[in-house]
Structure formats: structure tokens, C-alpha cells
Length: 254
Image (cartoon, rainbow, N blue to C red; front, side, top):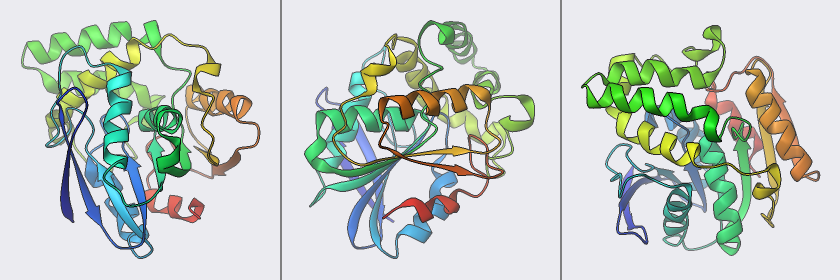
């Protein structure tokens, strides 16, 4: 994969990796999701797309930027990446990355041809996350990033759903993503908005959900279907919030 770099409006350096040729397609990862999770999807899509895999703030080589991180900054990061592409892109947003994608579609719609969103967690934002943010901050400050990761995995639903989609990644491997985890929780905790906040993307929207996902993610998709009644909606039998076979999602891109 080829490396790319943009500087977001606040001066934060955001890295992304590019593979393949064709129309641009951007992948926006979810919370605590290692880039390795998306490699099988990239390999399938690279035959027909130029795929850009974004390392969001605090993940991989991307800087965290000024603290606390805000959702608006996250959306600006994606708009900056889109500005590096030669033509409007298909954008796939997974989990929190799906919300970032919707915000970017409102801010820079002409740079986005369509969005494909897998379980954007609209129903799990705001004050409900404040205890988790406080616990994760404390664990990281005390040099216990593995405890922050364990706490955050609760975002993925009931116990039988938490780990099975992480493609074999161990807690130890995920601890390097702790800075991005804190950035995401800061951004998500500050979002106290109604469902209508996410409206306004004037591009085709596809909403995907797993057939075995946790109730809060099913509620989130239902809420977005109400906001976008014309959106395509598909359920992937047997899948959970962190898909075990993420390459299956390639079937839903034009």
C-alpha cells in the first residue's frame, strides 16, 4: 500500500494508505478498530477501486491533535483526505466512522459520490459514555492501557459479541490504539444531538447491520432509517458489530 498524508485545518497530521486503481473509495474505521481488520476488504475492493484506508486521529501514525478532540475535527480530517482525491469518492464508514462519514457528507457533499455505513452508533452517544471516558482516561494515565481497552470493548455489545470480530487481535495488540480510543470517546461524549442532526447528506446512503448485533446498534440503524427513509438497508445474517468476515461488505458497493 502507498502512504498518504494530509494536514487537517487545525494542523493535525492525518495518515492514510492507498491500494488499487479505479474510482476512489475511502474506508473510515470505527472505534478501537485496527487497520488489519479492514485488510481483507481492501484486497477485494482494490481490483476495482483506488482504496484509501484512513488512520483516524490517535490511531497508527496519525496525530491526536489538541485535546479534547471534538467530533467536528474528526469530520474535518475526513474532508481533508477527500480533498486529496481526483474525483468524488464512495465512502465506507464503520461504526463511529459512519457518523464521521455522515458529517463529512454534509460538509463536503460534492466530494462524496455515495456512503455505505455499517452500524453508525447514533444511539450510544453523549452523557452515557462519560463514565467510560473517565475510566479509560484514568487507566491510560496510570499506564494501564489494557484496562482501557477492556472497558471500551463493552461498546461492542453483550459479552458473546465483544471479541469475536477482532480478527484474532489480542488485548495487548490493541493497547497501542489507546490514544485514538480516548480521542473517539472525547468526541462521542460531547455529542448530545437529536437524530435529525445527522440528516442532510445529499448522496445515496446504504445502511448495513449485522443479524446478530447488539440492540443499541440495531436501534441506531433504525433511527438513521427514519432520517433517511430512501436509504438502502441490508442485514448481514450472523454478523455482529465488528464483522468477522468484513470482506462480505464488498457486495454492497456499486
